[in-house]
Image 1 (tube, chains in turn green, yellow):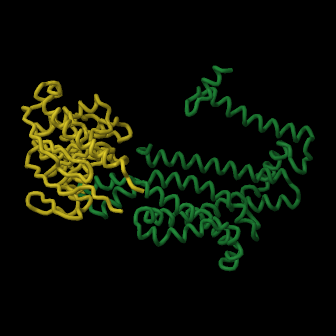
Image 2 (cartoon, rainbow over the protein chains, first blue to last red):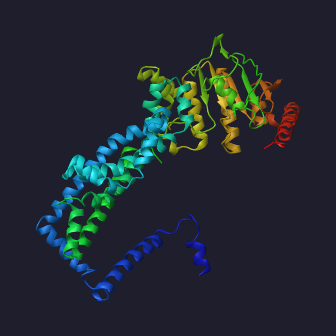
Image 3 (tube, rainbow over the protein chains, first blue to last red):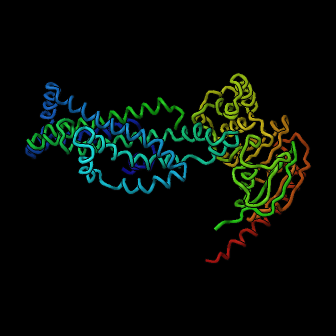
Length: 264
Length: 247
């Protein structure tokens, strides 16, 4: 026991890959086993906890009648639109905010105010201003991600080493060149990481976005299933969101390695 | 509250000379070098290079920093070409110049690597090549080997001596390492504790070309004793002045 602790429970020390995979698999399998025990064993009524095969059946039905695909497509469109629009504005503004005191003075107080507002509190206003169609969903996701991105990206650009800029000046670069050729490239790895993290957050706003007058989308699918006590469908919706999140995260990781092979 | 980092500093760096500033930590050595680089502005006084007053940074005054300042997104080759490229030098000529200096610092074959694939010593060699490729009138070096282990540091000192022997660049070098200052410099300026002033200038009469073997010679030791004594006085004075800090 003592030797086990020595070998496997030392802070920040590597453990053998096999041990790593074993632990990961064990935990995932235990959760699945617990779920099976609770549902098949009849400990929890199937109205509240569906059995795994009911969820699989729900998935097959959803694929066959096309509803799963349509709802997923709608949600992905909403999220990607909100996220892309937010990123287009947040990346340049964030870099400005972190690098130029005047931009910081202009943007930071407002940003810090808005980013603590719960997005759900803004929904009534959004309905009045942009209606109840897809624009409302995109707006919710935009507001949920934009201000967070702004603060995080400002921090990234604030973190660019002053020496890196200074050495460029001593190599003959003017201010413009320093910004374009040094400051911006230096922020890219941090910007990519921020986008990856905030895309995850964008997914979490999906259900909030689809609270209002939605008739399609995964969030709507989950909410609507609740009304009929279709817990198998609720589980399905949640799992699809989780799976899509996992996929987008991996895509971002690959993209970063591919676009920024020089970054650590 | 503004702190006076430097006061009544006057020094002349002669053309084609290797001048070294040595002083206790916190004495304002780095501030002095950044003033010469034009990265900060003096509140009083002037700095001139070849009779022209310095205003702002320029490629006349190349600088090698203590921290690693290679551009991580550029290869070794592109890092060394950076200054040449923004000066608008044609690609073929850029490549030749860069290759020559990469060769001088002994990194042939490493051209296509990114900084993250290099050791600390290699990164500083590339930084040196990058500064030299720009052909500055004076090369400013701010404890460039300070972050390296002692073996790598003495290799870098020998490399720098070789390069200097071949080019006789004007160099202003900052260090807190007394051995390093004597080994490299034609003149060593000893700075006082804050506010930094030049306490004394020591001419280093050791013959050139120099090698690390000289570190143990009597002549070297004699100079070292003298400089150590000067610095020790300053360090004591600095500690004494820190103690009764009124709150």
